[in-house]
Length: 164
Image 1: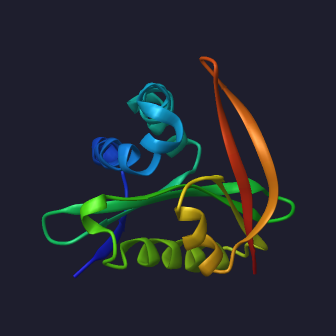
Image 2: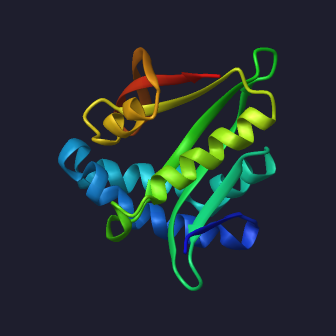
């Protein structure tokens, strides 16, 4: 049975391991190994994850008794408008099709709705099949963005939104 728990500082390595285990499957054909390595180091180094935790990001880990299968990370980005952002949602390829992503996204929905959210936003690579998962879940494409992330790399994303 899959359960969710809120991550603490000692769980940052689990988050890093899941990211490293999911990114090649999700992005290799889209952005290539060099950009994957660059982004994992930039976005998932321990210091960056710890900073996010200290800045109020909530990380949820999906697990059973001994294995972790995925995680989600979100925070509030627009205090006045009560807009939250889903920064991360990754499920290990070995757990695809088991409903782990749905469990994670539903819990994020519940938590941000309980906190009074007006909307939940996320960025997804335009060529990532996860886009279809979000469209099925009620998200709509709000805009198209191209973000310079340094190192000569860009993120070519859709900003998607779910309104409550």
